[in-house]
Image 1 (cartoon, rainbow, N blue to C red):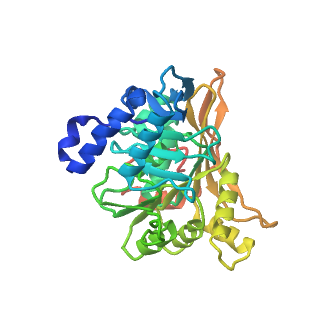
Image 2: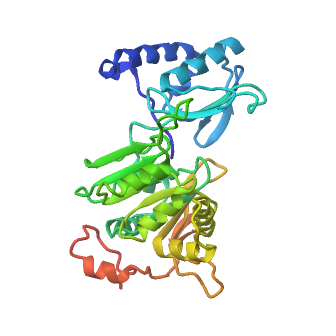
Image 3: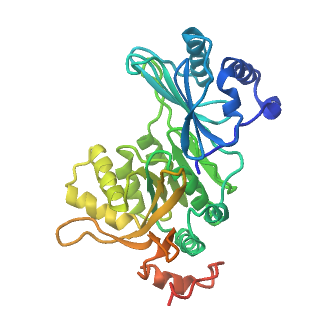
Length: 378
């Protein structure tokens, strides 16, 4: 799901001369992997050394026969990438994350952290954006589930998309954001720009590290706090990774409904636990029980998406977040789960649990441009 079509040279006339120069230079220096960057079916390119190049296609990894001429030419290509993005690999900064001219995300780790030499992973992002209809066609979700999620987004429910690396979280978040009403102001915060929202009124902010002398730069927490003063209708955080989680939770609890983010976790309940840990990283003087209660009050839905051994990506749970129980533990209530049907195939199925937003749906039926499934909303 998180595949991407690289750009081509056709749009280069709109780039400034320096960017055009870097882009041409980069295509030349990255020649051994350029065909993979230009291949629509490849979602990620991984270089573990000048002679070890792997690609991901259809959710599976394949080693290629391609290689750079030698270690020196590979290091030259890496230096060109860092020069374009304005970042430096130094003995004090062994890792950087950035975007290539065509919008692909690149992550670089150098020695001594990379024991076998400089390693690079390039995640590609599609110019042709997937939508909910395509996810239904691919079997990632059902139409009934898509209807439920569309209603939840319309009613400004706070959503966390949970999953592992490469499971399709960003793609799913893109699709969910397409359900946001067109007349709302959406502010997007990301470490490195990946989301491709299609609404007109979208403002995107990106984290910037300080320079070598500690000057400039802005963190995710600083961006988030500034965003609250910029009249957002919806706040979308590409991925919660640290202390900004507590700011997001507090914003969700203070009238900023319809917020969305992603988190790395294997189950909905694990996603809530992950939010707890990240909130504690924010350095707030608040007991865990209070943080847990805030998370349970703030987050309405957790959507779990997983990648399977055959390369497919499917929703496995759509769960409503409940109150903490009498033992102070977070709770979830599954609305959809992936289960085996009569034919032996696994398919996302309604659990029979009535969603808590029934009353809101009843009041908002006239405004919901959706054919409501009667079994849900009785």
